[in-house]
Length: 135
View (tube, one colour):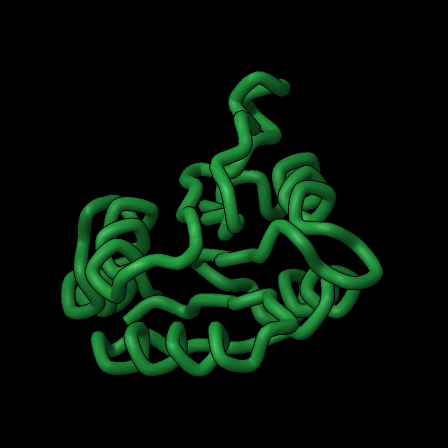
């Protein structure tokens, strides 16, 4: 099980992501805007962040940049959700999201993007990995 932070202000999208990821054994925490999302990154220490590109207060690109610039969170993978493909990769690569999911998306597309972002492992393997590295 991985802890996944979802930052999105669309309740329907949040409910879909909660259903898909919790059904696969992940723990999902939610923030409704970019500013509270960054605060939750610091307090929750997620293993993955899924962020909408269009957020109130701080947009998704800025949230991603903040996560990637902070040495404490730079290695946390970020999946950006967007209504259309945006070439974030034209920017400094280290500040770009690890993956982009274009809405609308299917449950399978979301689940596959999450699995890839978590290193190709499912929730059971993630829990086993954490148990092996816990002191």
